[in-house]
Image 1: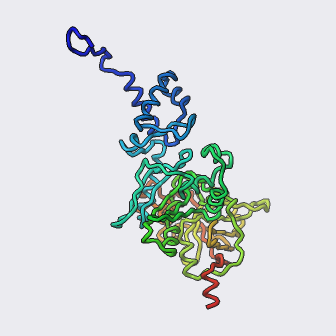
Image 2: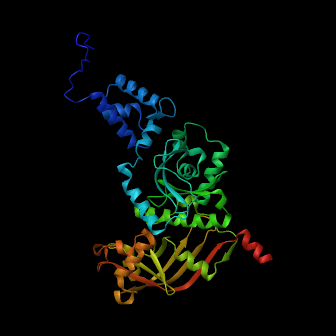
Length: 415
């Protein structure tokens, strides 16, 4: 201060304040990186000397704009920064869009959140609230303890032991290990609290490895076993459609590790079979190569008038194999209880557009709706089937449809 003049002597920055610029850059960077950044990463990215960086980090941490779980851990957006604006990182734009499009196809009966794993916490990336008067809220930008949350369990279950230890920086307790094994076995996780019951299922961008999780929250007063079972099935269908939109051809969380023996089984009823075959589950088509060796590939199908309709994408080699030897088999199953499985054998018949209900373009549109959740009106002419697509009908010569025998099944047989 210039005491002789009585006015503050403001330094001339030409309307540019480097310290303010650094602060905003750091906050924007952390807001766009839910998994957090280390001091070294921040220093390198922002080109800030370490001494100045730590002074800035300590200030922002004290004010609650950033936080750090433990010393030397990554710095994360704090509650005050999250409250300024819900974080929607540009790197996750495709995932968020897939989430909202899938929700449009299947409006949620209870609030659903799209979540990611961020070190030892679960980060809410997007939320789709239900329309009921009483509902739970999971705000985008909200963090939850991964060790205590079903979304954290299904995401941690997909990591190796070394990755889990790195993220949690703690030993896995027997209780947590049991929860992770159950999540991997069931393809879902559950937690019932005093106020809400939560269900989580994984989203798998490659079809097998969890990359995100859907978390549904049900007020406890609305919870009952059958309602939760129905919601879980619908939640899995949403997760499958999001996974397909992200590039997955199939939806088999945790891969072959989760394939279980069917054990004691019963035949599905006609209604159970129709319901199962209407879901967004890929089939595995087995055909024979010219050298006699088997060839197995995931395919999307439609069950129509007691026939399976499948389409070979342009350039699919299996279409040529089937044209040479039409004897094929299809397997459609789910890797979680009640372990419904359908096994089909038949002779594939090549179809032309006149053989298909409403033609090849309509079949392609129906597959888009079924597996991606797109509405027909959202499918443009540029996405219509071209002549190089090959469609087949597979009338089953043998069809086996079974599911795991449940306690309810045993009770009905003994009643």
